[in-house]
Image: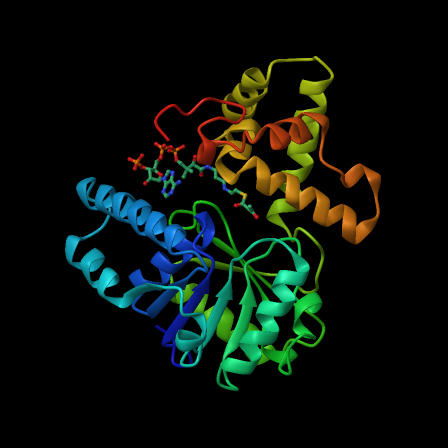
Length: 289
Ligand code: CAA
């Protein structure tokens, strides 16, 4: 735990938010996971329960540590109550600028003046939400990777007006989670890892849509020639094709570059509701959820 931060609130109980909250509770922080829908919180609780129990069974985590983490983790729809005593709020809600701006304005109103307000967004840079608050110096991006319980990297991205103390506190927080802070000097949409990943994904989709190879074989090449743990198509299914689609649209909205628009096959899968693992079908089939 760090000195400045004791109480953490995570907004949005989707794939990212729920695992970020679990990581925070496991590291000793009093943590609240907030969603507007109770149904989403119930689903998050069940998925985390299964995931953490499996980690205990496999000897990756200690039963006592997991039980303690559960005792520190509250799942609630009452955002303003828990935000009122938070030292750090991590927003992991939908990738929609107007929604995020209104969340940040609300948080600024209900949180104590010292509370850091960060967003897990990888595409909406924090300067676009910081001015919805009266504390832009305490706002930055803190970007986790999927699955957040496993991946070590957390990107810390200040905007021009972020206080250096905010970056230091965020960095200490990330280290206290047992993760690796990766700092950017300035804002750029997509940050580091996603830009690398986008370049690979764009090429993979070009090869597939150009009829050069089946997507399974492109994945095989990435795994067996480059040593990637997953191929680009498997990874799209893990991250969510809806998320990939949204990220492309957000980049187009920020750059106006038509090359940023989602590839044809992504648009088709998105419109068919085939989002990947979360819907049971994406590039691959996931019959058991
Ligand atoms: N949540 C939590 N833990 C998970 C998980 C998940 N969804 N999937 C796998 N794991 C963990 C589990 O501990 C799992 O063990 P069990 O199956 O026994 O429970 C363990 O990882 C090993 O899993 P697998 O044997 O299924 O597969 P693996 O050895 O390939 O490891 C992986 C899985 C860690 C996800 C690995 O494939 C990997 O590192 N893949 C690349 C992930 C990646 O690139 N992430 C970045 C995505 S981009 C992003 O997140 C940015 C964004 O802005 C959207």
